[in-house]
Image 1 (cartoon, rainbow, N blue to C red):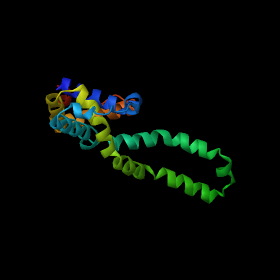
Image 2 (cartoon, rainbow, N blue to C red):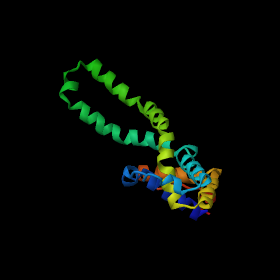
Image 3 (cartoon, helix red, strand yellow):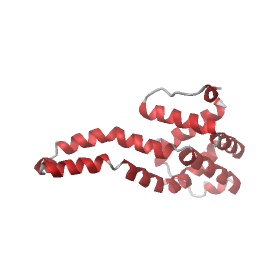
Image 4 (cartoon, helix red, strand yellow):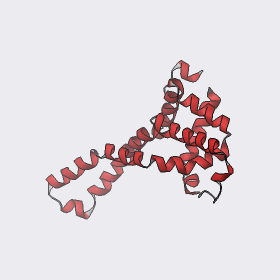
Length: 167
C-alpha cells in the first residue's frame, strides 16, 4: 500500500511541477505507447486529480493562501484607495467569495491536464503499474490517504491518517 501511495504522490508532484508542466510532448511521443497504456495513464491522471478530489480541494487551498496577499496589494493600490468605502467593501466581498468560481474554472481545465500529462506518466510507469496505482487510489483508503497527504503538503500541516491508511 505504501509503495502504491508513494507512486501516486510521485505522480502528483510531477504533475504539479512547473518544469514538467512546461515540458512539451515530443511529436510522436504519445504514439510510442499502446492505446491501452495511454488509456491507463489517462485514468491514472484523472483519478489522481479528479476522483480523489485533489484538484478541487487544492485549488481552494491555493486561493485561500494567496488571498491575503491579493487583498493587501489591492488595499494599497491607488485605484482602490480612490473608491468610496462601500465600493471597497464590495470588492473585498467579491474576492472573498470567488473561491468556488476559481474551483469551477480549474476543474474545467482538468481534461486538458489529463491529456497533457498522460504521455508523460505512460513514460514513467508501465501499464500494469498505472492500473495498480489507479485501482488503489479508487479505494476509500487510497483516495483518502492521498488527499490528506496532498492537503498536508499544500498547507504544510502534518497529515492526520487513520491506522488503516498507514498500514
